[in-house]
Image (tube, rainbow, N blue to C red; front, side, top):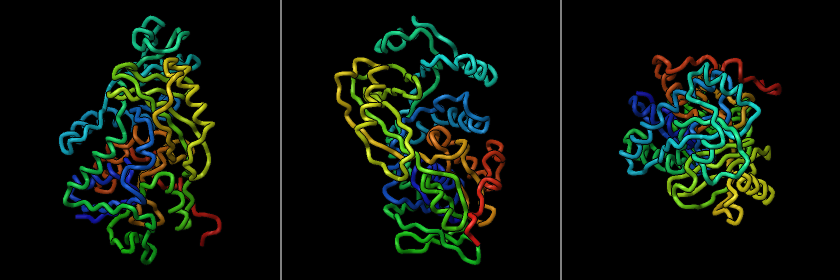
Length: 370
């Protein structure tokens, strides 16, 4: 049985832990604050890339597997924890026009149930939508997950498992090396010996690898969100226009997102983003014009050059594994990414071809390192 330490308690760290625990490993999950309170909590929870036809096949393969797995994951967690992550197939309307032909060509190649719809369909599906939309793309089976509830369920499930230890509020976590090999993690004033260490620290992953003299091109990218409240069922489906989206929750809450800001590790919300997001909300759903948002918040995505995550062992440091760099699609890709990581670590048949995600050749030694 392996002893594994995972640094990072977001959806990637938690699902990596769950996969490994199910296979009989012992896992210590180290988190800088409370499990599930960073980017995984802050995101929208659409179980699809915003514009899936823009992404390389490496993203599509992970997204396809995850989309098929999410319903059973939600059911399993709800049964085990009594916390329902609310995986809700409500469909998505893309209201943009410029890429419709490209999107339909992609859908035909990928055998996706994406179709063009007219104004009659649009306003029958979403009567509260602003006037003027004449054509859209529609995929009925796309779901959203209520990610704060997903993270609460994952935290509860991990705490239930006898082979798991949660070490929260450990912002001092550092890799522990012996003779050039990763021997564990130093965190919370203690040394945690491990057969393997997984970095699932999202936007902070580049900083931790830099301490080893390795350059990982993962940077924080801030996203701000607004939350509104209406009656349950008022907005029946997700809508997306010019990269801004509205997502309905079962209880009538509506998420509006999001910004894309390169501001380092600053998670401060701004009046400028509030005005911009509210304007987008009103452009999509005019009835929100007179409402004040219930809440505004920000999270830090792990930005990477092409959005293809890093999943695999770091060649220069045996025993050190990465599962990071998912950029805007961490929640979408998490189930497949974490199953793939467990497959590689346990030498099982990989659930998808691991080559596009491997670390080798994508992480370089920093110029001023020995």
